[in-house]
Image (cartoon, rainbow over all chains, first blue to last red; front, side):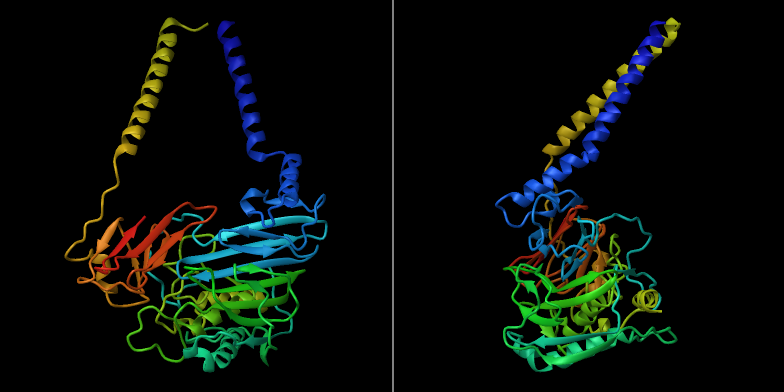
Length: 332
Length: 124
């Protein structure tokens, strides 16, 4: 009797502890909503994503137009039914952030830094571009064509003259799935068209704090000086709804050493503008990082859509097999 | 309901469990007092670096950190150094490059270049 009673009591206590732990971990929806409202109502204009629930209703506070930041990047909350995604490519890895504002008013923030999940691998040596099958896609595609303008203000002098042509080549190359892999199946993506220089004062809708601003519907690529000490190469913001891209802008960090054409003699720490912009064009067309959600960036280093691109090489101007797979999934 | 031997065995298992917990606490405490090994420059770089010396853009998987590579033995500028899934690009003279995983990871890797000697130190 005594043992049975103690066992029953122990079981009861265990259940109470388990239910209590679940309550603490899962945070009741009401508390989560309150947390979101407090963050929105606070004077602090740009709450950190980590201070917010992963998903919360937009009721009780005006979220549209507010900036939510995470790990050095940020996005401006779009109207209901619209979403925004940011991809920042750095020389020390990448940052991605996505905010979905559903039609029913739920705001969901997803954060990702490439290398989030540890995966055991037998090898870490880069796979050849033409045999690496890895890819990931974003939750949208381009319908019709992608038409963009370029603002060359503050472009580094050594690439200023060739930049517009390089960008045109990059967006066209990605759209046509240009590859050096012989026998590979190429999928025609959206048509890419350069509309010329943007007007004075017309820049990409991306703040110097690597934050996606409000979309104006015009696709623009421009230069900026990133925050001091920034090691970000380029940032692309993509605004989409109902699975279709509505607008995509990109900024290139002018503080980085860039080159166009051939790899400069003695190159040690400069990046190929064409290769990096082919990568950014991939984002615009719906390609995510090949190593997103894993720690395989060393393995996929030969893919254009890898999250860590090597300097002093032009190999990223054309797609590898994984990049082609992504285009095939989206556009065929 | 329970025999005396069963009760004794139960008590013994509790004693063992508590002992294990206490000993592991002791290890954790003593472990925190041990400072990490300081990287000592080596005349010849570890074997994994050999193929990447003087080749910007090459990718190296480092087996152990911290490690310091002398400039005289190997120029790693522009080389992507990777350790346990985190990677950084080795910067030019006097620079420091840090990859800190964001919300989900917690791993960090840095490559710093001594402004005087240009030796590269990789730290996790």
